[in-house]
Image 1 (cartoon, rainbow, N blue to C red):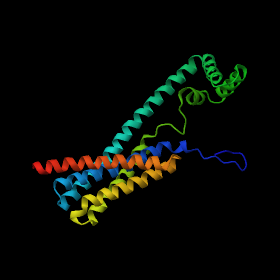
Image 2 (image 1 turned 90 degrees about the horizontal axis):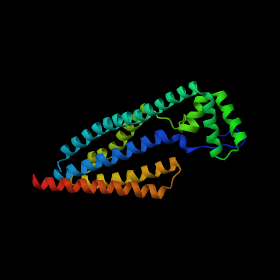
Image 3 (image 1 turned 180 degrees about the vertical axis):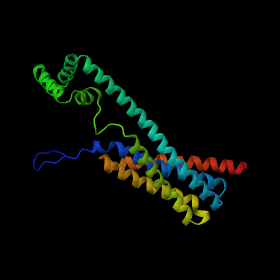
Image 4 (image 1 turned 60 degrees about the horizontal axis):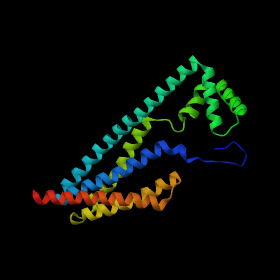
Length: 233
């Protein structure tokens, strides 16, 4: 946000960490649980078995999402820390060369050499590690990896997404479980796509079409497999 009076800027990139995890978690919760329910119902329409399978899918999926996000984002965080440690060593060993390196980066971005040198020297005097992290490595406080945040966000949003098809199983008549779950899942995916697009400043229609198409495809394939195995058994 700008400090100029009457001039405020809200940059959506600040949301990228939690927004990615939230959209991925909720989308996966809806698609995987709805697909599981539709597939099980196609093989064996007994409502009790379908509900148990869906509940198990919710718990297992939430734990899997949390673990997967934590491991993945931790790997990113470890890489960032390794790069920063290497940069600190280079700054301690030869600060003059690092100033030249920073100067060359600014010249490549369009500053003339004398101005680029002055900018590099001033930034190096204030916080050399932060200057190189941001301008050489592309690491900043906005985009840096946060494993715990990503894991908790993914687990929570997966659970919320998975709760939608589970709730439909509870209230829908036995013969209508599959179509009701599919309809509720597609409507939820469309809403999720619209919310995610709005939060990220992207186009709503494209996001909605993309997420509903893949959700419908996943459920159709799973239902087909369920029918095939149900017929064989």
